[in-house]
Length: 607
Ligand code: ARG
Image 1: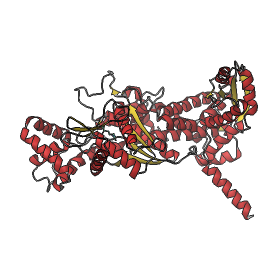
Image 2: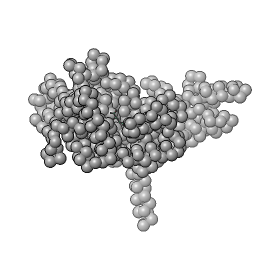
Image 3: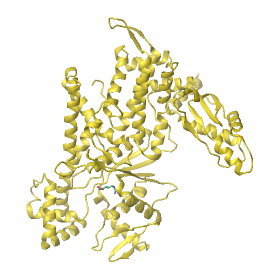
Protein backbone atom coordinates (compact mmCIF):
# COMPACT_ATOMS: atom_id res chain seq x y z
CA UNK A 1 0.00 0.00 0.00
CA UNK A 2 2.82 2.34 0.96
CA UNK A 3 4.44 1.84 -2.35
CA UNK A 4 1.19 2.51 -4.15
CA UNK A 5 0.77 5.79 -2.27
CA UNK A 6 4.32 6.80 -3.03
CA UNK A 7 3.91 5.97 -6.67
CA UNK A 8 0.68 7.95 -6.76
CA UNK A 9 2.19 11.00 -5.08
CA UNK A 10 5.26 10.95 -7.27
CA UNK A 11 2.96 10.74 -10.26
CA UNK A 12 1.11 13.80 -8.97
CA UNK A 13 4.37 15.59 -8.35
CA UNK A 14 5.49 14.85 -11.86
CA UNK A 15 2.28 16.00 -13.38
CA UNK A 16 2.40 19.32 -11.52
CA UNK A 17 6.10 19.75 -12.12
CA UNK A 18 5.86 19.03 -15.79
CA UNK A 19 4.73 21.92 -17.91
CA UNK A 20 2.90 21.75 -21.22
CA UNK A 21 4.75 20.46 -24.24
CA UNK A 22 5.97 22.67 -27.03
CA UNK A 23 4.24 21.31 -30.13
CA UNK A 24 6.95 22.54 -32.47
CA UNK A 25 9.74 21.13 -30.35
CA UNK A 26 8.02 17.74 -30.04
CA UNK A 27 7.41 17.54 -33.79
CA UNK A 28 10.93 18.71 -34.47
CA UNK A 29 12.29 15.97 -32.28
CA UNK A 30 10.08 13.24 -33.79
CA UNK A 31 10.94 14.24 -37.36
CA UNK A 32 14.59 14.58 -36.67
CA UNK A 33 14.59 10.97 -35.43
CA UNK A 34 12.60 9.86 -38.51
CA UNK A 35 14.72 11.79 -41.00
CA UNK A 36 17.99 10.58 -39.54
CA UNK A 37 16.73 7.00 -39.80
CA UNK A 38 15.32 7.45 -43.30
CA UNK A 39 18.33 9.36 -44.61
CA UNK A 40 21.38 7.97 -42.78
CA UNK A 41 23.74 9.25 -45.49
CA UNK A 42 22.79 12.93 -45.04
CA UNK A 43 24.70 14.69 -42.30
CA UNK A 44 22.93 17.44 -40.41
CA UNK A 45 19.68 17.10 -42.41
CA UNK A 46 17.24 20.05 -42.64
CA UNK A 47 14.25 19.67 -40.29
CA UNK A 48 11.56 22.08 -41.42
CA UNK A 49 8.36 22.04 -39.35
CA UNK A 50 5.72 24.73 -39.77
CA UNK A 51 2.15 25.51 -38.90
CA UNK A 52 -0.21 24.67 -41.79
CA UNK A 53 -2.29 27.38 -43.36
CA UNK A 54 -5.97 28.06 -42.74
CA UNK A 55 -7.17 25.15 -44.90
CA UNK A 56 -7.62 22.21 -42.54
CA UNK A 57 -7.41 19.83 -45.50
CA UNK A 58 -3.64 20.26 -45.31
CA UNK A 59 -3.43 19.17 -41.71
CA UNK A 60 -2.45 21.16 -38.65
CA UNK A 61 1.31 21.26 -39.05
CA UNK A 62 3.56 20.25 -41.88
CA UNK A 63 7.05 18.94 -42.46
CA UNK A 64 8.65 20.42 -45.57
CA UNK A 65 12.04 18.71 -45.40
CA UNK A 66 11.73 16.29 -48.31
CA UNK A 67 12.41 18.78 -51.11
CA UNK A 68 15.65 20.18 -49.60
CA UNK A 69 16.64 16.60 -48.70
CA UNK A 70 16.20 15.47 -52.31
CA UNK A 71 18.49 18.34 -53.31
CA UNK A 72 21.11 17.16 -50.86
CA UNK A 73 20.92 13.68 -52.42
CA UNK A 74 21.31 15.23 -55.86
CA UNK A 75 24.54 16.86 -54.67
CA UNK A 76 25.70 13.37 -53.67
CA UNK A 77 24.86 12.16 -57.18
CA UNK A 78 21.73 10.23 -56.13
CA UNK A 79 18.32 10.75 -57.62
CA UNK A 80 15.59 10.62 -55.00
CA UNK A 81 11.93 11.56 -55.46
CA UNK A 82 10.75 13.82 -52.61
CA UNK A 83 7.40 12.02 -52.41
CA UNK A 84 9.11 8.67 -51.84
CA UNK A 85 11.31 10.27 -49.25
CA UNK A 86 8.21 11.62 -47.46
CA UNK A 87 6.70 8.14 -47.27
CA UNK A 88 9.93 6.76 -45.91
CA UNK A 89 10.12 9.52 -43.28
CA UNK A 90 6.51 8.94 -42.17
CA UNK A 91 7.22 5.26 -41.70
CA UNK A 92 10.00 6.16 -39.29
CA UNK A 93 8.28 8.74 -37.06
CA UNK A 94 8.15 7.24 -33.56
CA UNK A 95 4.56 6.86 -32.32
CA UNK A 96 3.46 9.81 -30.20
CA UNK A 97 0.07 10.71 -28.64
CA UNK A 98 0.23 14.17 -30.25
CA UNK A 99 -0.19 12.83 -33.78
CA UNK A 100 -3.22 11.13 -35.32
CA UNK A 101 -2.10 10.73 -38.95
CA UNK A 102 0.05 11.94 -41.83
CA UNK A 103 -0.66 12.63 -45.47
CA UNK A 104 1.77 13.28 -48.26
CA UNK A 105 0.66 16.09 -50.57
CA UNK A 106 1.89 17.96 -53.63
CA UNK A 107 5.53 17.40 -54.51
CA UNK A 108 6.26 15.88 -51.09
CA UNK A 109 4.85 17.97 -48.24
CA UNK A 110 4.03 15.93 -45.18
CA UNK A 111 0.78 17.10 -43.62
CA UNK A 112 0.56 16.35 -39.92
CA UNK A 113 -2.83 15.91 -38.26
CA UNK A 114 -2.99 16.38 -34.49
CA UNK A 115 -4.79 14.01 -32.20
CA UNK A 116 -8.00 15.45 -30.73
CA UNK A 117 -7.66 13.57 -27.46
CA UNK A 118 -4.22 15.02 -26.94
CA UNK A 119 -5.51 18.57 -27.42
CA UNK A 120 -8.49 17.86 -25.14
CA UNK A 121 -6.09 16.63 -22.49
CA UNK A 122 -3.89 19.72 -22.80
CA UNK A 123 -6.87 22.05 -22.49
CA UNK A 124 -8.28 20.19 -19.48
CA UNK A 125 -5.01 20.55 -17.65
CA UNK A 126 -5.12 24.30 -18.28
CA UNK A 127 -8.47 24.41 -16.52
CA UNK A 128 -7.53 22.05 -13.71
CA UNK A 129 -3.96 23.15 -13.02
CA UNK A 130 -3.75 26.62 -14.53
CA UNK A 131 -1.75 27.81 -17.52
CA UNK A 132 1.66 26.36 -16.83
CA UNK A 133 4.86 27.52 -18.48
CA UNK A 134 6.85 25.08 -20.61
CA UNK A 135 9.70 23.43 -18.70
CA UNK A 136 13.05 25.19 -18.87
CA UNK A 137 16.04 23.28 -20.10
CA UNK A 138 18.27 25.24 -17.77
CA UNK A 139 17.35 27.71 -15.07
CA UNK A 140 19.45 30.78 -15.73
CA UNK A 141 20.09 33.95 -13.82
CA UNK A 142 19.06 36.87 -16.01
CA UNK A 143 19.86 40.49 -15.37
CA UNK A 144 17.61 42.93 -17.21
CA UNK A 145 18.92 46.47 -17.49
CA UNK A 146 16.01 48.70 -18.42
CA UNK A 147 14.33 52.08 -17.95
CA UNK A 148 17.54 53.88 -16.84
CA UNK A 149 16.57 57.57 -17.01
CA UNK A 150 19.08 60.27 -16.14
CA UNK A 151 19.08 62.38 -12.99
CA UNK A 152 18.21 66.05 -13.44
CA UNK A 153 16.94 65.39 -16.93
CA UNK A 154 13.40 64.61 -17.92
CA UNK A 155 12.49 60.95 -18.25
CA UNK A 156 11.33 60.88 -21.86
CA UNK A 157 9.31 58.60 -24.15
CA UNK A 158 12.43 56.62 -25.02
CA UNK A 159 12.79 55.72 -21.36
CA UNK A 160 9.09 54.90 -21.31
CA UNK A 161 9.62 52.40 -24.15
CA UNK A 162 12.57 50.88 -22.34
CA UNK A 163 10.50 50.66 -19.15
CA UNK A 164 7.53 49.00 -20.84
CA UNK A 165 9.54 46.56 -22.97
CA UNK A 166 11.98 45.71 -20.17
CA UNK A 167 9.20 45.10 -17.66
CA UNK A 168 7.38 42.82 -20.07
CA UNK A 169 10.49 40.78 -20.86
CA UNK A 170 11.10 40.49 -17.11
CA UNK A 171 7.53 39.33 -16.56
CA UNK A 172 7.89 36.72 -19.28
CA UNK A 173 11.17 35.34 -17.95
CA UNK A 174 9.89 35.34 -14.37
CA UNK A 175 6.86 33.38 -15.49
CA UNK A 176 9.09 30.89 -17.26
CA UNK A 177 10.99 30.37 -14.01
CA UNK A 178 14.23 32.25 -14.65
CA UNK A 179 15.95 33.95 -11.75
CA UNK A 180 15.41 37.56 -12.83
CA UNK A 181 17.17 40.67 -11.55
CA UNK A 182 15.59 43.93 -12.71
CA UNK A 183 18.21 46.68 -12.71
CA UNK A 184 17.77 50.43 -13.17
CA UNK A 185 21.11 51.71 -14.48
CA UNK A 186 20.28 55.33 -13.58
CA UNK A 187 22.41 58.08 -15.07
CA UNK A 188 23.33 59.39 -11.62
CA UNK A 189 27.05 60.09 -12.10
CA UNK A 190 29.28 62.03 -14.41
CA UNK A 191 30.51 65.54 -14.99
CA UNK A 192 27.12 67.25 -15.03
CA UNK A 193 26.98 66.76 -11.26
CA UNK A 194 29.92 69.13 -10.87
CA UNK A 195 27.94 72.10 -12.10
CA UNK A 196 24.74 70.98 -10.37
CA UNK A 197 26.48 70.72 -7.01
CA UNK A 198 28.43 73.94 -7.45
CA UNK A 199 25.20 75.75 -8.32
CA UNK A 200 23.40 74.21 -5.37
CA UNK A 201 26.14 75.31 -2.99
CA UNK A 202 25.96 78.90 -4.30
CA UNK A 203 22.22 79.13 -4.34
CA UNK A 204 21.45 77.31 -1.10
CA UNK A 205 24.52 77.73 1.14
CA UNK A 206 22.75 76.08 4.08
CA UNK A 207 21.82 72.95 2.07
CA UNK A 208 23.44 70.71 4.68
CA UNK A 209 20.97 71.89 7.33
CA UNK A 210 17.86 72.56 5.29
CA UNK A 211 16.65 70.68 2.23
CA UNK A 212 16.66 73.11 -0.69
CA UNK A 213 13.33 73.58 -2.46
CA UNK A 214 14.34 72.42 -5.93
CA UNK A 215 11.21 70.78 -7.24
CA UNK A 216 11.96 71.90 -10.78
CA UNK A 217 15.26 70.22 -11.52
CA UNK A 218 14.94 70.98 -15.24
CA UNK A 219 15.08 74.70 -14.57
CA UNK A 220 17.83 74.16 -12.04
CA UNK A 221 19.83 72.21 -14.63
CA UNK A 222 19.35 74.93 -17.22
CA UNK A 223 20.48 77.64 -14.78
CA UNK A 224 23.62 75.79 -13.85
CA UNK A 225 24.40 74.94 -17.47
CA UNK A 226 24.11 78.61 -18.38
CA UNK A 227 26.56 79.60 -15.66
CA UNK A 228 28.87 76.77 -16.68
CA UNK A 229 28.98 77.99 -20.27
CA UNK A 230 29.36 81.70 -19.45
CA UNK A 231 31.36 81.93 -16.25
CA UNK A 232 34.98 80.69 -16.19
CA UNK A 233 35.21 80.87 -12.40
CA UNK A 234 32.07 78.76 -12.04
CA UNK A 235 33.39 76.27 -14.53
CA UNK A 236 36.53 75.77 -12.46
CA UNK A 237 34.44 75.31 -9.34
CA UNK A 238 32.26 72.76 -11.16
CA UNK A 239 35.31 70.72 -12.19
CA UNK A 240 36.62 70.78 -8.64
CA UNK A 241 33.21 69.59 -7.42
CA UNK A 242 33.27 66.54 -9.70
CA UNK A 243 36.64 65.52 -8.35
CA UNK A 244 35.42 65.94 -4.77
CA UNK A 245 32.24 63.98 -5.44
CA UNK A 246 34.14 61.14 -7.08
CA UNK A 247 36.42 60.88 -4.09
CA UNK A 248 33.27 60.72 -1.94
CA UNK A 249 33.73 63.98 -0.01
CA UNK A 250 30.77 63.88 2.47
CA UNK A 251 29.37 67.37 1.76
CA UNK A 252 29.45 66.75 -1.96
CA UNK A 253 27.88 63.35 -1.56
CA UNK A 254 25.11 64.98 0.49
CA UNK A 255 24.46 67.59 -2.22
CA UNK A 256 24.46 64.86 -4.85
CA UNK A 257 21.95 62.82 -2.86
CA UNK A 258 19.65 65.82 -2.50
CA UNK A 259 19.65 66.32 -6.26
CA UNK A 260 19.16 62.62 -7.01
CA UNK A 261 16.24 62.41 -4.61
CA UNK A 262 14.25 65.01 -6.51
CA UNK A 263 14.51 63.02 -9.75
CA UNK A 264 14.06 59.73 -8.01
CA UNK A 265 10.69 60.80 -6.61
CA UNK A 266 9.51 61.81 -10.05
CA UNK A 267 10.63 58.53 -11.60
CA UNK A 268 8.92 56.59 -8.83
CA UNK A 269 5.59 58.25 -9.61
CA UNK A 270 5.77 56.83 -13.13
CA UNK A 271 6.79 53.37 -11.90
CA UNK A 272 3.96 53.31 -9.35
CA UNK A 273 1.36 54.22 -11.91
CA UNK A 274 2.57 51.63 -14.40
CA UNK A 275 3.17 49.00 -11.71
CA UNK A 276 6.86 48.61 -12.51
CA UNK A 277 9.21 46.94 -10.04
CA UNK A 278 12.90 47.70 -10.46
CA UNK A 279 16.02 47.91 -8.32
CA UNK A 280 18.04 51.10 -8.53
CA UNK A 281 21.72 50.56 -9.23
CA UNK A 282 22.94 53.66 -11.00
CA UNK A 283 26.27 54.45 -12.61
CA UNK A 284 27.58 55.78 -9.25
CA UNK A 285 27.48 52.24 -7.89
CA UNK A 286 30.40 51.39 -10.18
CA UNK A 287 32.80 54.24 -9.22
CA UNK A 288 35.29 52.10 -7.29
CA UNK A 289 34.86 49.28 -9.79
CA UNK A 290 35.64 51.70 -12.62
CA UNK A 291 38.87 52.72 -10.89
CA UNK A 292 39.76 49.06 -10.53
CA UNK A 293 38.97 47.95 -14.06
CA UNK A 294 40.83 50.92 -15.56
CA UNK A 295 43.94 49.85 -13.64
CA UNK A 296 43.53 46.26 -14.81
CA UNK A 297 42.96 47.21 -18.45
CA UNK A 298 45.93 49.48 -18.35
CA UNK A 299 48.20 46.92 -16.66
CA UNK A 300 47.27 44.30 -19.24
CA UNK A 301 48.04 46.61 -22.13
CA UNK A 302 44.51 47.02 -23.46
CA UNK A 303 44.49 50.83 -23.33
CA UNK A 304 45.88 52.96 -26.11
CA UNK A 305 46.71 56.63 -25.86
CA UNK A 306 44.73 58.84 -28.21
CA UNK A 307 45.51 62.56 -27.84
CA UNK A 308 45.40 62.28 -24.07
CA UNK A 309 42.38 59.99 -23.96
CA UNK A 310 42.75 56.34 -23.12
CA UNK A 311 40.81 54.18 -25.54
CA UNK A 312 40.17 50.50 -26.01
CA UNK A 313 39.34 48.77 -29.30
CA UNK A 314 36.94 45.86 -29.65
CA UNK A 315 37.89 43.26 -32.26
CA UNK A 316 35.94 44.42 -35.29
CA UNK A 317 36.13 48.00 -34.09
CA UNK A 318 35.14 50.94 -36.17
CA UNK A 319 35.37 53.14 -33.11
CA UNK A 320 37.00 52.46 -29.73
CA UNK A 321 35.62 52.90 -26.23
CA UNK A 322 36.75 56.00 -24.39
CA UNK A 323 37.78 54.49 -21.09
CA UNK A 324 39.46 57.56 -19.57
CA UNK A 325 38.94 61.14 -20.77
CA UNK A 326 41.89 63.50 -21.16
CA UNK A 327 40.92 65.20 -17.87
CA UNK A 328 41.15 61.81 -16.15
CA UNK A 329 37.38 61.39 -15.83
CA UNK A 330 35.40 58.27 -16.62
CA UNK A 331 32.63 57.94 -19.22
CA UNK A 332 29.46 56.02 -20.03
CA UNK A 333 31.76 53.44 -21.66
CA UNK A 334 33.81 53.02 -18.48
CA UNK A 335 30.70 52.45 -16.39
CA UNK A 336 29.39 49.84 -18.82
CA UNK A 337 32.70 47.96 -18.76
CA UNK A 338 32.66 47.96 -14.96
CA UNK A 339 28.99 46.99 -14.98
CA UNK A 340 29.34 44.00 -17.31
CA UNK A 341 32.20 42.71 -15.16
CA UNK A 342 30.21 43.16 -11.95
CA UNK A 343 27.19 41.45 -13.48
CA UNK A 344 28.96 38.41 -14.85
CA UNK A 345 31.55 37.92 -12.14
CA UNK A 346 30.00 39.18 -8.91
CA UNK A 347 26.31 38.80 -9.68
CA UNK A 348 27.02 35.57 -11.58
CA UNK A 349 24.44 36.34 -14.23
CA UNK A 350 24.24 33.85 -17.09
CA UNK A 351 22.38 36.27 -19.30
CA UNK A 352 22.28 40.08 -19.49
CA UNK A 353 19.64 41.97 -21.43
CA UNK A 354 20.08 45.70 -22.10
CA UNK A 355 16.96 47.55 -23.20
CA UNK A 356 17.73 50.91 -24.82
CA UNK A 357 17.01 52.82 -28.03
CA UNK A 358 18.48 51.29 -31.19
CA UNK A 359 20.91 54.22 -31.40
CA UNK A 360 23.03 52.56 -28.72
CA UNK A 361 23.46 49.28 -30.64
CA UNK A 362 27.06 50.06 -31.61
CA UNK A 363 27.94 51.07 -28.06
CA UNK A 364 26.83 47.68 -26.79
CA UNK A 365 28.50 45.77 -29.63
CA UNK A 366 31.81 47.35 -28.66
CA UNK A 367 31.21 46.76 -24.94
CA UNK A 368 30.49 43.07 -25.67
CA UNK A 369 33.55 42.77 -27.93
CA UNK A 370 35.84 44.38 -25.34
CA UNK A 371 34.41 42.27 -22.52
CA UNK A 372 35.09 39.18 -24.65
CA UNK A 373 38.61 40.33 -25.46
CA UNK A 374 39.59 40.69 -21.81
CA UNK A 375 37.95 37.43 -20.75
CA UNK A 376 35.00 38.83 -18.77
CA UNK A 377 32.42 37.57 -21.25
CA UNK A 378 32.53 33.97 -22.42
CA UNK A 379 30.04 33.36 -25.24
CA UNK A 380 30.13 29.62 -24.47
CA UNK A 381 28.43 30.16 -21.13
CA UNK A 382 27.05 33.70 -21.20
CA UNK A 383 24.31 35.22 -23.28
CA UNK A 384 24.15 38.99 -23.82
CA UNK A 385 21.48 40.84 -25.76
CA UNK A 386 20.98 44.43 -26.67
CA UNK A 387 17.23 44.83 -27.06
CA UNK A 388 17.02 47.96 -29.17
CA UNK A 389 13.92 49.87 -30.16
CA UNK A 390 12.98 52.58 -32.64
CA UNK A 391 12.09 56.16 -31.84
CA UNK A 392 8.63 57.28 -30.79
CA UNK A 393 7.02 59.67 -33.26
CA UNK A 394 4.12 62.06 -32.88
CA UNK A 395 1.05 61.83 -35.10
CA UNK A 396 2.77 64.24 -37.48
CA UNK A 397 5.43 61.51 -37.96
CA UNK A 398 8.03 63.83 -36.44
CA UNK A 399 9.89 63.29 -33.21
CA UNK A 400 7.36 63.19 -30.38
CA UNK A 401 7.27 66.67 -28.79
CA UNK A 402 4.79 69.04 -27.21
CA UNK A 403 3.23 71.73 -29.39
CA UNK A 404 5.81 74.21 -28.16
CA UNK A 405 8.59 71.80 -29.12
CA UNK A 406 9.54 70.66 -25.60
CA UNK A 407 10.07 67.10 -24.46
CA UNK A 408 6.79 65.60 -23.35
CA UNK A 409 6.61 65.09 -19.59
CA UNK A 410 5.68 61.50 -18.95
CA UNK A 411 3.36 62.32 -16.06
CA UNK A 412 1.44 64.68 -18.36
CA UNK A 413 1.27 61.93 -20.96
CA UNK A 414 -0.15 59.44 -18.44
CA UNK A 415 -2.68 62.05 -17.27
CA UNK A 416 -3.74 62.64 -20.84
CA UNK A 417 -4.17 58.87 -21.19
CA UNK A 418 -6.42 58.81 -18.14
CA UNK A 419 -8.52 61.66 -19.46
CA UNK A 420 -8.89 60.12 -22.89
CA UNK A 421 -9.70 56.67 -21.56
CA UNK A 422 -12.45 58.10 -19.34
CA UNK A 423 -13.92 59.88 -22.36
CA UNK A 424 -13.89 56.62 -24.31
CA UNK A 425 -15.69 54.82 -21.48
CA UNK A 426 -18.25 57.61 -21.19
CA UNK A 427 -18.92 57.51 -24.93
CA UNK A 428 -19.81 53.86 -24.45
CA UNK A 429 -22.09 54.85 -21.56
CA UNK A 430 -20.07 52.73 -19.17
CA UNK A 431 -20.42 55.39 -16.47
CA UNK A 432 -24.15 54.54 -16.39
CA UNK A 433 -23.52 50.86 -15.67
CA UNK A 434 -20.43 50.79 -13.49
CA UNK A 435 -20.03 51.95 -9.89
CA UNK A 436 -17.61 54.88 -9.46
CA UNK A 437 -14.95 52.47 -8.24
CA UNK A 438 -15.44 50.07 -11.15
CA UNK A 439 -15.28 53.00 -13.54
CA UNK A 440 -12.01 54.18 -12.03
CA UNK A 441 -10.52 50.69 -12.32
CA UNK A 442 -11.62 50.46 -15.93
CA UNK A 443 -10.23 53.93 -16.64
CA UNK A 444 -6.78 53.08 -15.28
CA UNK A 445 -6.70 49.64 -16.84
CA UNK A 446 -7.56 51.06 -20.25
CA UNK A 447 -5.25 54.09 -20.01
CA UNK A 448 -2.09 52.34 -18.86
CA UNK A 449 -2.99 49.15 -20.73
CA UNK A 450 -3.34 50.95 -24.03
CA UNK A 451 -0.07 52.85 -23.63
CA UNK A 452 1.81 49.64 -22.84
CA UNK A 453 0.06 47.56 -25.46
CA UNK A 454 0.55 50.07 -28.28
CA UNK A 455 4.25 49.95 -27.59
CA UNK A 456 4.55 46.18 -27.17
CA UNK A 457 2.38 45.27 -30.16
CA UNK A 458 4.68 47.04 -32.60
CA UNK A 459 7.84 45.33 -33.72
CA UNK A 460 10.27 47.03 -31.36
CA UNK A 461 12.88 47.44 -34.08
CA UNK A 462 10.68 49.93 -35.91
CA UNK A 463 9.82 53.47 -34.97
CA UNK A 464 6.24 53.87 -33.87
CA UNK A 465 3.66 56.60 -33.92
CA UNK A 466 2.20 57.49 -30.56
CA UNK A 467 -1.50 58.14 -31.05
CA UNK A 468 -4.15 58.04 -28.34
CA UNK A 469 -6.83 57.93 -31.04
CA UNK A 470 -5.34 54.75 -32.50
CA UNK A 471 -4.64 53.02 -29.22
CA UNK A 472 -8.13 53.72 -27.85
CA UNK A 473 -9.91 52.23 -30.86
CA UNK A 474 -12.13 49.32 -29.93
CA UNK A 475 -11.44 47.46 -33.17
CA UNK A 476 -8.25 45.83 -34.34
CA UNK A 477 -5.26 44.76 -32.33
CA UNK A 478 -5.62 47.22 -29.43
CA UNK A 479 -5.75 46.88 -25.66
CA UNK A 480 -9.30 48.22 -25.63
CA UNK A 481 -10.53 45.55 -28.04
CA UNK A 482 -8.78 42.81 -26.09
CA UNK A 483 -9.94 43.95 -22.66
CA UNK A 484 -13.53 44.07 -23.92
CA UNK A 485 -13.17 40.69 -25.61
CA UNK A 486 -11.91 39.23 -22.36
CA UNK A 487 -14.79 40.60 -20.24
CA UNK A 488 -17.24 39.29 -22.82
CA UNK A 489 -15.67 35.82 -22.69
CA UNK A 490 -15.77 35.87 -18.90
CA UNK A 491 -19.41 36.91 -18.88
CA UNK A 492 -20.52 33.77 -20.76
CA UNK A 493 -19.93 31.42 -17.85
CA UNK A 494 -21.06 34.07 -15.40
CA UNK A 495 -24.43 34.24 -17.14
CA UNK A 496 -24.81 30.52 -16.54
CA UNK A 497 -23.89 31.00 -12.88
CA UNK A 498 -20.69 29.05 -13.34
CA UNK A 499 -17.87 30.28 -11.12
CA UNK A 500 -14.28 29.38 -12.02
CA UNK A 501 -14.35 26.78 -9.23
CA UNK A 502 -17.47 25.18 -10.61
CA UNK A 503 -15.87 25.07 -14.05
CA UNK A 504 -12.82 23.38 -12.58
CA UNK A 505 -15.13 20.70 -11.23
CA UNK A 506 -16.89 20.43 -14.56
CA UNK A 507 -13.55 19.58 -16.13
CA UNK A 508 -13.46 16.41 -14.02
CA UNK A 509 -16.71 15.10 -15.45
CA UNK A 510 -16.91 16.66 -18.92
CA UNK A 511 -14.63 16.76 -21.93
CA UNK A 512 -13.64 19.96 -23.69
CA UNK A 513 -15.65 20.02 -26.89
CA UNK A 514 -13.56 20.04 -30.09
CA UNK A 515 -16.03 18.56 -32.60
CA UNK A 516 -17.04 21.68 -34.46
CA UNK A 517 -14.52 23.09 -36.92
CA UNK A 518 -14.41 26.42 -35.03
CA UNK A 519 -13.91 24.67 -31.69
CA UNK A 520 -11.00 22.75 -33.16
CA UNK A 521 -9.52 25.93 -34.57
CA UNK A 522 -9.67 27.66 -31.18
CA UNK A 523 -8.30 24.64 -29.33
CA UNK A 524 -5.30 24.49 -31.63
CA UNK A 525 -4.55 28.18 -31.10
CA UNK A 526 -4.64 27.72 -27.34
CA UNK A 527 -2.13 24.88 -27.23
CA UNK A 528 0.38 26.99 -29.15
CA UNK A 529 1.01 29.20 -26.10
CA UNK A 530 4.30 27.50 -25.05
CA UNK A 531 5.64 27.83 -28.59
CA UNK A 532 4.90 31.52 -28.70
CA UNK A 533 6.76 32.09 -25.43
CA UNK A 534 9.77 30.04 -26.53
CA UNK A 535 10.03 32.04 -29.73
CA UNK A 536 10.13 35.26 -27.70
CA UNK A 537 12.90 33.84 -25.51
CA UNK A 538 14.92 33.62 -28.73
CA UNK A 539 14.32 37.02 -30.31
CA UNK A 540 12.94 39.04 -27.36
CA UNK A 541 10.21 40.55 -29.54
CA UNK A 542 7.07 40.96 -27.45
CA UNK A 543 4.85 41.71 -30.44
CA UNK A 544 4.59 37.95 -31.07
CA UNK A 545 2.64 37.66 -27.83
CA UNK A 546 0.36 40.57 -28.79
CA UNK A 547 -0.36 38.96 -32.14
CA UNK A 548 -1.09 35.71 -30.36
CA UNK A 549 -3.50 37.12 -27.79
CA UNK A 550 -5.25 38.98 -30.62
CA UNK A 551 -5.52 35.68 -32.51
CA UNK A 552 -7.14 34.08 -29.47
CA UNK A 553 -9.70 36.89 -29.29
CA UNK A 554 -10.58 36.80 -32.99
CA UNK A 555 -10.66 33.00 -33.15
CA UNK A 556 -12.85 33.01 -30.08
CA UNK A 557 -15.29 35.38 -31.68
CA UNK A 558 -15.47 33.14 -34.79
CA UNK A 559 -16.20 30.21 -32.50
CA UNK A 560 -18.79 32.11 -30.51
CA UNK A 561 -20.56 33.28 -33.68
CA UNK A 562 -21.16 29.71 -34.81
CA UNK A 563 -21.36 27.71 -31.58
CA UNK A 564 -23.82 28.40 -28.80
CA UNK A 565 -22.50 27.88 -25.26
CA UNK A 566 -25.70 28.61 -23.39
CA UNK A 567 -29.26 28.48 -24.67
CA UNK A 568 -31.87 30.77 -23.23
CA UNK A 569 -35.62 30.68 -23.65
CA UNK A 570 -37.74 33.65 -24.69
CA UNK A 571 -37.88 34.96 -21.13
CA UNK A 572 -34.08 34.96 -20.90
CA UNK A 573 -33.75 31.96 -18.58
CA UNK A 574 -30.91 29.56 -19.21
CA UNK A 575 -32.39 26.30 -20.45
CA UNK A 576 -29.32 24.51 -21.71
CA UNK A 577 -25.61 24.67 -21.04
CA UNK A 578 -23.04 23.16 -23.37
CA UNK A 579 -20.45 22.13 -20.81
CA UNK A 580 -17.78 21.18 -23.32
CA UNK A 581 -17.91 24.65 -24.81
CA UNK A 582 -17.91 26.36 -21.43
CA UNK A 583 -14.69 24.48 -20.76
CA UNK A 584 -13.19 25.69 -24.03
CA UNK A 585 -14.27 29.22 -23.16
CA UNK A 586 -12.57 28.97 -19.78
CA UNK A 587 -9.31 27.69 -21.32
CA UNK A 588 -9.36 30.69 -23.67
CA UNK A 589 -9.99 33.14 -20.81
CA UNK A 590 -7.22 31.65 -18.68
CA UNK A 591 -4.71 31.77 -21.53
CA UNK A 592 -5.63 35.38 -22.28
CA UNK A 593 -5.16 36.29 -18.62
CA UNK A 594 -1.66 34.84 -18.74
CA UNK A 595 -0.84 36.88 -21.82
CA UNK A 596 -2.17 40.04 -20.18
CA UNK A 597 -0.11 39.39 -17.13
CA UNK A 598 3.09 39.04 -19.16
CA UNK A 599 2.25 42.21 -21.09
CA UNK A 600 1.58 44.11 -17.86
CA UNK A 601 -2.12 44.65 -18.63
CA UNK A 602 -4.72 44.44 -15.90
CA UNK A 603 -7.95 42.88 -17.12
CA UNK A 604 -11.06 43.80 -15.19
CA UNK A 605 -14.10 41.70 -14.61
CA UNK A 606 -16.54 44.50 -15.43
CA UNK A 607 -16.12 47.25 -17.96
N1 ARG B 1 20.89 56.25 -19.08
C1 ARG B 1 21.02 55.75 -20.41
C2 ARG B 1 20.17 56.59 -21.35
O1 ARG B 1 19.37 57.40 -20.93
C3 ARG B 1 20.60 54.28 -20.54
C4 ARG B 1 21.43 53.31 -19.76
C5 ARG B 1 21.27 51.90 -20.28
N2 ARG B 1 22.05 50.95 -19.58
C6 ARG B 1 23.38 50.77 -19.68
N3 ARG B 1 23.94 49.84 -18.98
N4 ARG B 1 24.08 51.53 -20.48
O2 ARG B 1 20.29 56.45 -22.55
